[in-house]
Length: 357
Figure: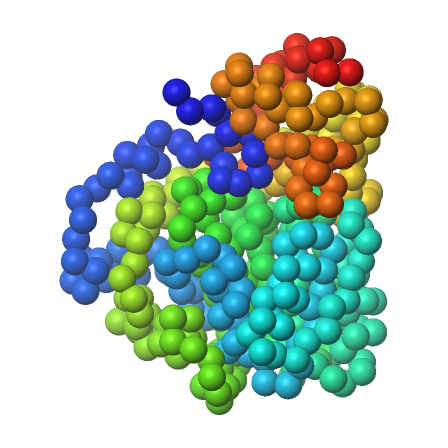
């Protein structure tokens, strides 16, 4: 039997989601599929408060991260990094042959509006990339404050990764003015990996049409033309799309404000538990994620051993990522998780911690 997942992604998937995903295959160029597609994209527009199209991509989020810079960087890109995943976006941009500069904050610290303003004031850039919620560190940067700065630079494409925040916290794209806001579904959406969703502004779609060498698979114009017919450019991952349709209906049945409140409560509970065990919080105060908590060890706890002991009891836990592996641990509190799920995991860890200290 597989271990119950308490890692930041892929997250534990509910049985009702698997059941929804097991619906029979249909032709993806049929009216039946178009109806499902339209219902999903309409639901995503409601979730994100945007009249602009929200596309479905059969890929990981990194596919859309690459696609976004290939479509929208015509001059030079500023890549803002404060952890493993945001830093990788700079590597992605450079590997696409595009001019780019990295602007880095210390791991555990957020990207600030002042950092963004200082970079854009140079006039060198026509695009920026930003990770809203850095999964490697549990840091959530102040997106609304950064969005206010971006309004002073309308010629700069505002590209945001909301991979581990979308659906768990309010994202009002009309107010934020993002040009691309993307996510993978294996985190707060509560689905298996393999599908990405991304909202694209009208301004960005028009800019993309003038960008040479933007490729095919992630060509925004291809996505737009197919979306007008309630379809995708290439064969979609139908089972995941069935699951997304099901999850969106669950989100609205729960009520978005209730959903956001549940995530806030679980975040607060987890932070309190981490501190009660004698650990500290890696993310700076005021910049802590609502979907996962990154704890810093006391230097005496053997996280590798704790991970093995938890696995033997049927629980998959995390022991850090990148350069802070085995110095930190991450506890997710997102998607379909509930407070009783957290209490179950905390109980196991409290039982095992004396054996690894």
